[in-house]
Image (cartoon, rainbow, N blue to C red; front, side, top):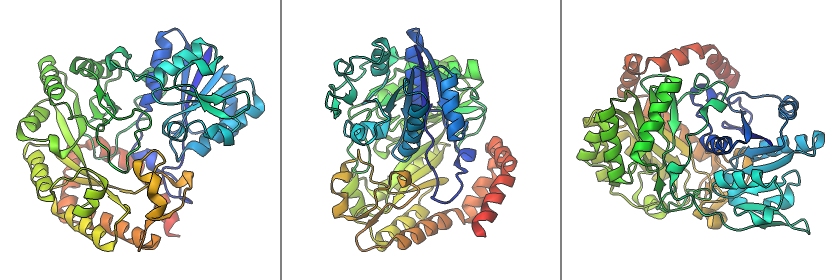
Length: 473
């Protein structure tokens, strides 16, 4: 049995523009790597193709899959990369119809069995967590699909049906570390966002799954709600392995809620400090979890930057879409992080249902008032698995173009606004924040705080300049 897992590359950019995002940010496909590690542990031959790291023309990619002797091709896609992934599956079926094709990832989990009714080149879908489902599929030789939980397949009438829900993995420590060695260019080809790390090589880790909150815009179709996590000992050993085997010096905990379980975080900080592990890290936190004691622990254990999902500066918009947190309190908490000696990044969203120009300008002004070192502003995208999706067409104009649903395009326009208004306000938000002396000085200090970022930027400058000139012309 030979399984090839493929991370499909959709557009992470704007339609009609060259995607240069992987110059600045390319993280390994951790979910796929976890599945590969489980399969390998059970003696199954598995390889990974990451189309983000090594893009190939379609025909060359199909030939590569066939050359590897694949019995099964498993493709993981988001909503925006689904069509590209399906092109690969369809082209493969034309040349090698005997190769079993299955899809997993957020889009497959969200749409589910009906996806099979419109896309005949897909043999089945893996719904939910993929490790145990993929293992059981392989061990069954991809036969008897209806007997394996977590699978969508075609019944005798050719209609997509769902086998049964897959029980979630109770103890995440039972999983082996992701199969980083399956990525031919790891860690050299992979890099966290520029200026978001102090040292290199660096990479990302996910140490928990699920989220108990119910924000309107979040898709929980893969890991569901609730909260499961690796133990502090497992996390520290994971970091130690990356440092020992790959020379990793900094990691980003890509968990939605790294700080949710306070006891876990405190034990992690204590164990990491006791072992003298010289690996720094970033994490994502929610403001209600942050206090001075926790921030001291994070700083002492090597935390370099904390990211917060702030989303909006308009109280009424926040009340509609997520658990409300007093805006005055947000500024106080962010200042505490700065005073503890860590960088702060704010995550915002533009174009939420219910927003108008006044609300968005309120968010811009609010962001400028906060002690933030950096921001990330996404364009609201109503993903099919998010709660807001059910009523999205009642709240504005929605163009459901999967290729554009990457948080870089306004596919939704709230009532009372135009797409051009949103684009103008988005550009104004970015310019207003970054065209300030304080921010310029902050990036100047990155010459010694994040020297690898400067080197990467300068090395890629000719390509960046060519891209900019092309857009201007």
